[in-house]
Image (tube, rainbow, N blue to C red):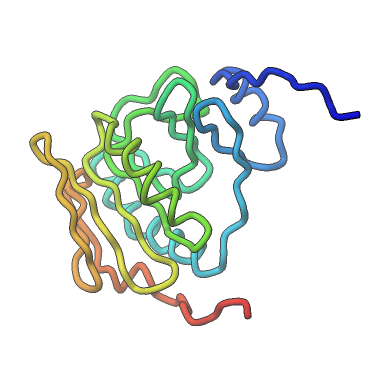
Length: 189
């Protein structure tokens, strides 16, 4: 006999935060639905580490907080993500388990996350009033894409070398430095 149908209800932010605090697996919350997060490749992790080392001094100099991978970003009442990196210069919200007002969000693209990072997250992040830039850095090839907000408009820039400007941190970094020590050729066969 088939299982009886049951009504699905979106998970509230409070219920999500409570579940996440006890869970051994990280989840993002998308419109009230939990989505477990997969582990990342060596290249992905090394790129995130390099970016944290490059952005840390810029954030500190400006008096901002830089978070790597484990801080939640609330983008709506029922949607919370774990960006790879984010810089926040605004005062923190009351809840110590998430941020709401980053000026910069960085996602490192992999085969499994690229679609979500380019579609769903792109427009949700750009809708944040505080956000000045959304940076996508590929873990598959030496390439970054920068979405900058200026005067109510969004500008797109593809970068394969040279300086990556980060207006919210009043600085930048050389794209090549994000890939220091990273072997992009090593992939499981």
